Image (cartoon, rainbow, N blue to C red; front, side):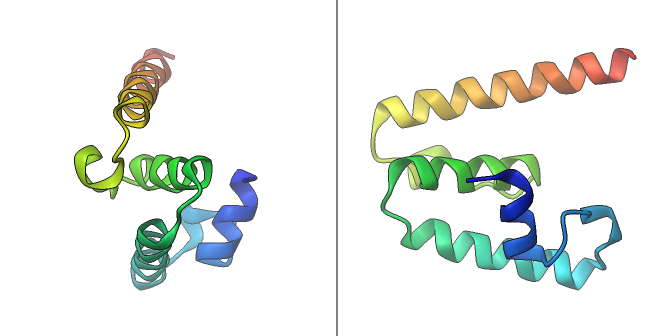
Length: 90
């Protein structure tokens, strides 16, 4: 899954800053529906990760049945948090 392609698929643009609030909310809702329907583990993780970056990810226990997937998600959250801290230091 290419990041920009996913943004265009759900939001119609790769520039989220240009989106009005209702369009952002609608795209997030579509992503959540697709997350609930997706059975491929890697695609499911990618959707969850994008939702996490948007501050809209559902709980890990609800999203991932497999403990290894939940652990991968926790690792992703830690890395994203550290990247955000490093960005704030610049």
